[in-house]
Amino acid sequence: MRDQFRPLLAALLAMALPGLGHLTLRRWGRALLWHLTIVGGGVALFALYDVPVGSTVSPAEAAETAAALPTDVTLPIAILYVLSAVDAYLVGRADVAERRQADATAEAVRRRAASGDDGAADRSDGLTGANSAPSAAAESDAGPAEIECPHCGKETDADLDFCHWCTEPLPWSETE
Image (cartoon, rainbow, N blue to C red):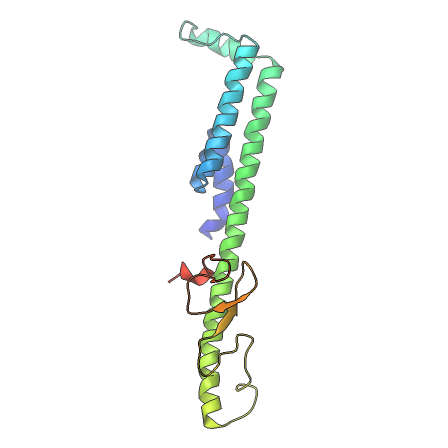
C-alpha cells in the first residue's frame, strides 16, 4: 500500500524543490540533472532578462519584483518544474510496477519449486497422472530446475541469484 503513494510523494517533492522527488526514488543522476537544469535555467533567464536579485532589495520590493517578473522568465521555469514532477511520478510508477512484477515472479518460482518437490515424490511412487507430469521448469533427476530469466528470456539455473546469460540479478535474489 505504501508503494502506491511513492510516485505521488515524489511528484509533490519535485514541485517543492527541483530534484527532490527523484532523490526519494533513489535516482541520483536524474535528481542532479533536473536540479541543475531548473536552477541553471532559472539563473540564465534571470541574467538574460536582467532581473534584479540581491540582498539590497527589501522584502516588499522583492514581492513586487516577483509579481512583475516577465512571463519569458517564469513560464519556462514553471514548465520545467511541471516536467520534473511528471517525470518523478512516471519513474515512481515504473518502479512500483517493476517491484510488483519481481514479487510475482518470485512467488511463481516458489510455487514451481514447491510443486516440483511434490511431483518428484509422486514419480518415485510410480504413479502417473496430472501431478507427475513435468512442469514448464522441468527438473531433471540429476540437476536443478531451469527457469526463464525475466530479462533475457533464456533458461537459467533456479538456484542462482543471477542469470548466467545476461548477468542480471534474478527477482528472488533480493527477497531472500
